[in-house]
Length: 147
Image (cartoon, rainbow, N blue to C red; front, side, top):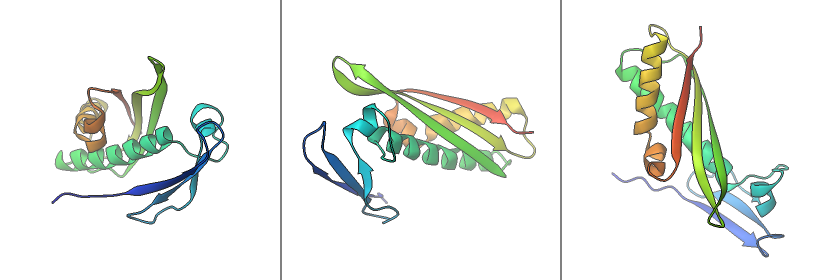
């Protein structure tokens, strides 16, 4: 069964001095998150950006994919701490997402560092957000097993 989720923005004004308010339509988990051009290219100053939202999507998706893969391997995690860092820059004059760097620290009983890193790589490749970005955005994962 297909899953559909939606968000909506109301934007007022031009690009440089305008602003928008972002709502999670499906979940209603957030309403009125401010977005501006300045929050993308300068100081966030309490506002979000599409790149930050993409980082949030990738970090949360990856954490679920990794938890699933670790569980399938017989070593369910006690805790995973995941950060996604999105890098964007101008390419041919257009703002372009270049990379998503995942970092994960895991507390996973019964697994060694090499196996954890291998499974972390598999999860990166299988995560739906990674799959959406693959071929367009450089993807990497740095996995560290907590002692």
